[in-house]
Image 1 (cartoon, rainbow, N blue to C red):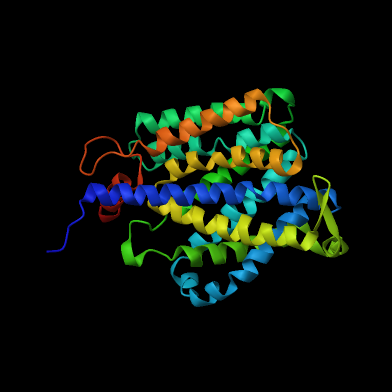
Image 2: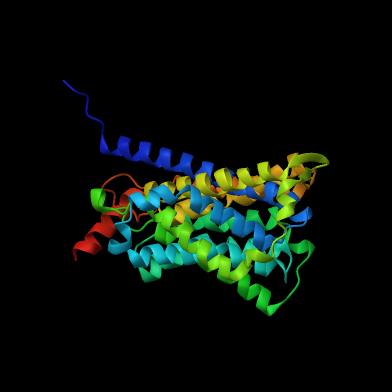
Length: 334
């Protein structure tokens, strides 16, 4: 007789897989800075690095875009929103923000996105959220403030703060749009197709903003220094495209489908911790005691939010993929 797996066991397995994908995504996204910074120091403009990153990933995902071309007819708004917000918006607004305000301040404001996701779920979608998920967001935001040492260079620039807040709103769009159709079963839009068209759309938008025809292409034929060690610039670009973009977006979208936007958003805060640790190891940027303590608090917050999933059929408010899928399905049916 075949052994039946309980629904709660399947839910735990799905949450575990989703958490693993979210961690891979955070590592991949967090590794972009240690590869991008040497290229910028070698002479490339930050927006040009972003354009190379998105356009290179779009070209790699082009066969998937052709394969899922039916999405253009079925979900044009989703594809346009993902390209504009989740790809182009986050990158362009963040880099514009750090040109006017300290990086730590911009990063902290951008990673207010998990709290904004909770607000969206609670007040716009009118779904309940658990206290544990809310506590996880608070802890993660507080720990993140220590990681980026927001007190070390607080500068007030109204436009810069607005741009950083715009990056946070675009990141909310990333989590919300990644979750679209996750409860539709076989009829759900293929996440790889959504990512492929999102990257294509983002590349078009960034082309208009970055104007790559003015880029110093010769930088890519030379070397860049990673903590004093010369590394081929094209190798760093390959890492940014393959790992920090393609792998990061694919695992990130799949993790949102298995968890929920708010839980995946809290886990994504680990990106700042990972980026700081990698910068310490690879670029020689040393960690301070508050940064280490803040990283631990972010980990605790992410764990609390992820572990807040109620048992199947429980009346407890939803904070994970399983419970929210039921609520979403009911709303769709209504």
